[in-house]
Amino acid sequence: MQIGHSARVGAFLGALLQIKGVHFPILPFLLEWRGLSAEEIAVVVATPFFLRLGVSPGIAFLADRSGRHRGTIVLLGWWSVAMAALLGQLSGFYAILGAAVALSLAMTTIMPLTEVIAVGGVRAHGCDYGRMRVWGSLTFILASSIAAWCIVLLGVGSVVWLVFVGCLITAITAHLLPADILELASSGDGKPPLRLGAIRELLLSPVFLMFLVACGAIQAAHATYYAFGSIHWTRQGLSAELIGALWALGVFAEIILFAWSGAVYQRLSAGALMVIGGAASVVRWAVMAVDPGFGVLVLLQVLHALTFGASHLAAIRFISLAVDMKFAATAQALYATTAMGVAMGGATLASGVFYEKMGGNTFFLMAGLAGVGLIAAVGVVRFWGGGLLTDAKPRVEFV
Image 1: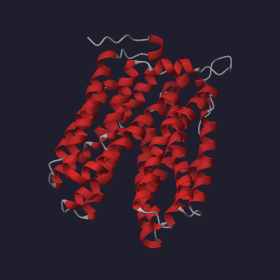
Image 2: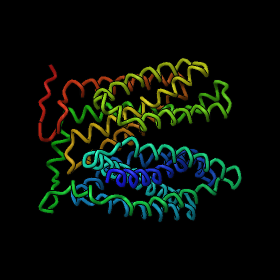
Image 3: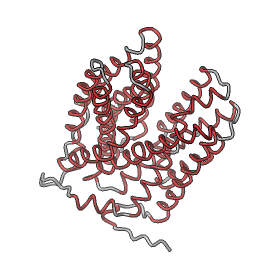
Image 4: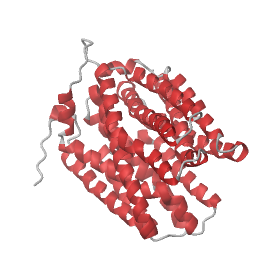
């Protein structure tokens, strides 16, 4: 059962994240090719970050309430196929905006729902979460490389059909996701177990709020790197080949950590991983701000395993231990919305403003943001007892 569950979830994550490998890095080029201005491209890219604040947790709550996480993923998968097909045919800013945003929201909502199934396998069968997640990182790299190759040989327009094929593969593999673990989200009498009061209780938990701040700030501190890393390195005189190698190194470091996540979880708690991710993030962005040489940049890219990888593993581990399975999807969606949604969107917009004026010194601001996350992570370690938040109802006294 463990092998079957891990293989099916890993295959689906591989299918899902290969879309991101094409869609996220190449989308601005595709939109420019379709005739959108720089301002219009910014709107298309930024809008999903903020809309997902309500959309993703709302859909996740309904999935938790019904206990039908796989069914929801299947519906969203086929919806993404339709939106990708439309994106290849539509013209005009508003039409493209609607299709692109709908596609992005579907993809970002599928991820936390899938994490619930993955965590269910960890709880029920002792599956290794990192071994499942690593396939997504591998296909991300592969898809990015294929997309670059297609652009050179076939032009930018070919990318939209790569996205369509990726969505089709994702929708098909969604039907292969294990369904047995989803029963953990339902009560024994078959009635919907989830009520808004339980979610409200979770959101009123100081520990859960500190968790959201910690992981949200640490992940959002990557904003300048994601948006301007390549541009900044080009200004430092690095070639396109070296820049590509640096990006690949960061992802490979992340892959290695995910592959060994089982051993990591045995030695480090979720809170400890948060603290390590926050501390590494402060160091990484502070050093990046002083324009180090290529050798130091290599070391900083290896830290991606901690600044992103360890922080993400910490979040998954925290939710699996601190949140009842009945509303795990809602908690996952709140994490995804905070870390990769509102916080990342806001930090990205701020990075654009400050990088124009401060250049590489903007990384110092990211180090400060990571410092906020580090402080919150220390708070999680200090006040979380390691059990369910809604059952234990931990009291937090800030004295």
